[in-house]
Length: 111
Image (cartoon, rainbow, N blue to C red; front, side, top):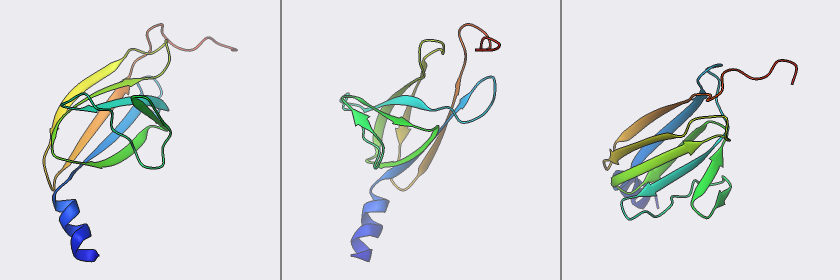
């Protein structure tokens, strides 16, 4: 079993996504639309997944087959959509940082 696990790791790449609020610089819970080159949504183990996206608390790591991927990250209507694309290589780790920016300035005081 150990040998097959090592082989599987060598045949995949890892993407580590960190999402922060652009104002507070703290991890930002969000929805992540991560798709392969064919447009198929990727699931993250142990995280809620629906249709074409999963949600996370601001940090997630996935082991995926090598290839090209696109990512869209959103956090409600008050934040701008973050988009990016990357190529994942077998046996390598890709670190992706996303800073979500508020569209309408800071939060309303006293709300």
